[in-house]
Length: 379
Image (cartoon, rainbow, N blue to C red; front, top):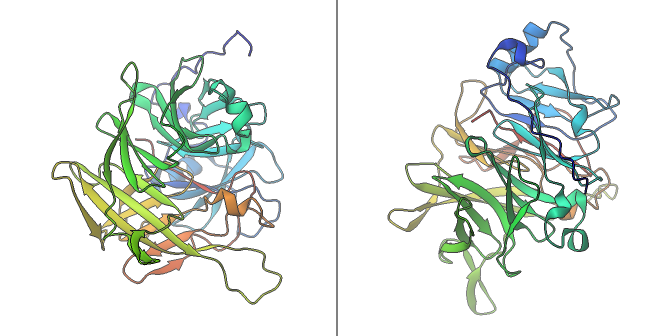
C-alpha cells in the first residue's frame, strides 16, 4: 500500500454555498441502483436554488448512475419527480449509507466516505488492511453494514463474507478487526449511548465498546424462543433468520430487533427468474434497564427504514412519511447476485396494520453491484 496517505477532507462551514448539490434534506433518501433504461418520469431542474429547496423539504430516493457516470438521480417521495446530483466517486462501486454519508468500495480496495450534498470526501484505509481479507472475501462483498459516529470520527462496519465487526477512525492507516470467532455472523449493527450493538444469526444481541483500547464483544441477551420460535422435529427452536436489523434509541434505553420474513416466489411465469420476496416483518424490543423482551405490533407515529444502510426511524410526516410502516430496500446479496437483473426488486413500504406492501415509486432500479439504499438525513 502506498505509504503516502491522502488527508481527510476539511469540513466546510455551514453555508448554502457549501452545498453545490443542495442542502441535505431532513428526510431520508434512497440511493437507487445502476440502470440504463428509463422507467420513471423525470423532471430536470436547472435552477440549483429549486433543487436545494426540494431536497431540504421532502424525502427522496437517490438513484444510481445511468449513462452518465458522474450523475445520480434523486427521486422525491412526495412530488414523485426526479432531480440530479453529481456523484462520480460512487461510479462502479458498492455503496451503503449512514448519517447522510455514503461509504464506497471499488475493485481497487479503496474505501471512502462521501457526502453527496456537500461533496466532501474522507479517505479511509484500504479494505484489505483487515486481516486475511484478501484470502477470505471479495471487494464487492467487503462491507455488509455501516454505522458512522461522526462526532467521534468513527466508522464501524460489518466486513467480509462472514459479517465480522470492525472499525476505523478517520485518520487511521488500517482497519481494526474485533475478534469474535467464526460462530456468529452479524446481520446488523447500531450505535447507542457509546456502545455498538449487534444482532446476528444466533438470535443474540451483543455489545462492544469500540472506544476501549482492546475492544471485546460481550453477549447481552438472546431473543426468546417463545417470541420467535417454532416446533421442529419435536423440538422448540429459533426460526431461521432471512434478514434482521437492530435499531438503537427507540425509547430511552430500548433496542429494536426487526426481522424480515420472506418466501420463495411461486410465480407461474416461466420467464421470471426471481426467487425471493419479502412477505412480512416482525418487531421485538429489548429494554436494557429491565432486561425484558416484548413484541411490537404497532409503531405508532414512527416509521422504520432498513436495508443496505444504517437502520433508523423517523416520525411520520403528512403525505410524505407514513407512520406504523417499514420502508425497506433489497439487501439479500446471496440471492440477487444470481438473479437476472440484480437487487432492487424486493423493496417497498410495509404497512404494519394490514401486512401489505406498496412500492416506493412506480419504476425499476436494479443492480448486481449497488442496489438501492436509503440515505439517512444527517444526524
